[in-house]
Length: 171
Image (cartoon, rainbow, N blue to C red; front, side, top):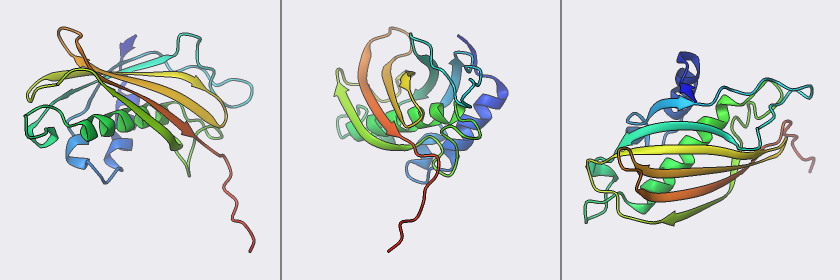
């Protein structure tokens, strides 16, 4: 992995800046490192390697992310998974592949597993793995873990879909 390039970090953060819900939380997410972006293939898309394509972000759990027990709220964990998986997908877009108007696609499923409580003030490592990506579907896994110890707090699998041309149906 390499540090996030300046362009990639700007793209990921720019994507997060355009999501209105949870905007106060998105400003606390920091891009840290990434695998090099795969080259554009002959079909105009990107081929994900067999081991997946990885990005890593950091975030510190703040009070407004917590439940009454001062641990990261489950809905906030799901929001983090949705946000960083979508931001990472935007980095893989080309002119004709996972591009606007549906940049990074739309969610089909978001399956969460909650493993341990993440206390307020804890720095988290959000490891995002694009495990598989075709011209219309992507499977992305995000693991939320303690930055220093690696203890896992939650993980989520995000399945997204994308269509290149959206055509209005005739009535």
